[in-house]
Image (tube, rainbow, N blue to C red):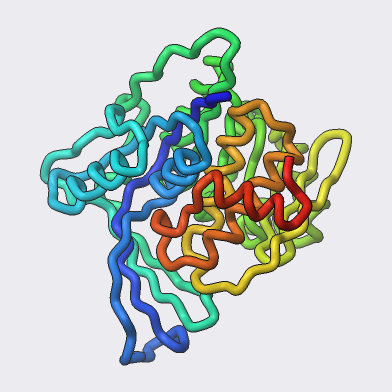
Length: 307
């Protein structure tokens, strides 16, 4: 079965420094290794969904510079349709400065550039094929007002809407927007940023009371938590040796979106996404770490979790 995933979001270049320890405030740490990777949460999730097997269309903005041209090419090489990417003249493409320590933890600073100009006017929505599940996948590295407007429009067009609130929302989303979200996906810090203090399940129910149909909380090495109307389900993480956690959350979202577009059950989609995220943590970089569908199936088979 072939599914369609539309990804609305950021396109960046990741400039990464690998160090033994992360610097503290005002501290300079030398001796690092530098590498450059294609990135941006939107583009990362698009590549992950394509590696998972979906037909993927990317909606976003780049500048008319060399980094933008490189990102257009890298997305095409990954099998992502770039026909809906808008080039903004005179604006630099987005970059992220990332520092990763020897344990795989990271800190990230982003200069969004053309991403900050993305608006509903840049989107020409494709026609949805009757009987086909089209998944619309969002993050938070373009203006929130544009994200919310596009989410509502996608729901009107009867798409399955996934919103990964990463980085954390700058303001509480409108109820109309949350009511259009089928799966709200966030990690623990993003969850508490929105809903305040409390345990994961309680806070997830707060977000559901605001309008979201289902909430998925990603918990790193502790797996993920699905909170739905009738049930709560915990998906265990797959044990791996961590090399680099950059992009693991994006990998999870891309594989989850693809799996849902195939018509897989939510629990099956969570297992597949968790396995993919584990594999991505064993390779450096974001898009470069996204595993193939075959690699994920092998891990699921080896651990007795094959579908």
